[in-house]
Image 1 (cartoon, helix red, strand yellow):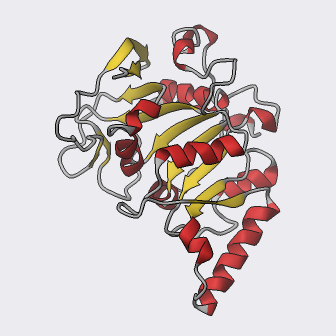
Image 2 (tube, rainbow, N blue to C red):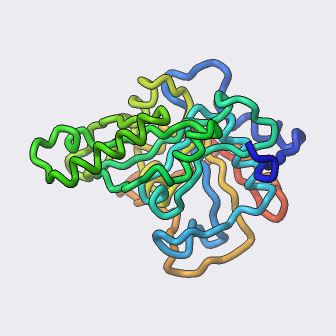
Length: 271
């Protein structure tokens, strides 16, 4: 890895984070850490599809440390399309590919028109990150009638995936929402022997994981709060409130300063 791109995270900042990280003993299901950066008005970005930098250098280094502590890092297709994320860790001292998380992309409708030029594939080709696993709708996999151009594109993309060690993973979708159920997503990860996952975004993915009962699958929450307001019209973290559902609260909360940012750590209160 290029030295100029590495990030340094001080060892003294690690102990306060440890209670919120995957345990050494393998859990029954993949450990889920929900982590993201937000403004003071709970916005992730200025608008859908607009890349917005919120984390300062200290909390950014923390995020890259967290990535090394998880078997996988997960984002939705919207984030993959808007940000072209690298989905690896640039933490100083990484010498083995085993220390990198496996990128997971949720793409139920096959929207991601990636090429070999996308960062995640370039890094995988150079051995600086792992190739992504892309979760797609099982229904899409089973469709018999498709346009020839579409078939050609899919074949080309599958070659790109396979050339660096990635693959498509078909998963059932909910007939009502046309989205993945989180239990099915975690089951698919477990079948790939991925025992922990860091969910980073975007807004739709985060909000879907915070509704009842899906939020009971979340083991820890680590939120970076930047000292800025983005204003109305942004992508906001605000899960749908279900009638008669209990308030969603955190327990075992800690607040940790990282440069000018504050990092909130906690665990979902179990009902």
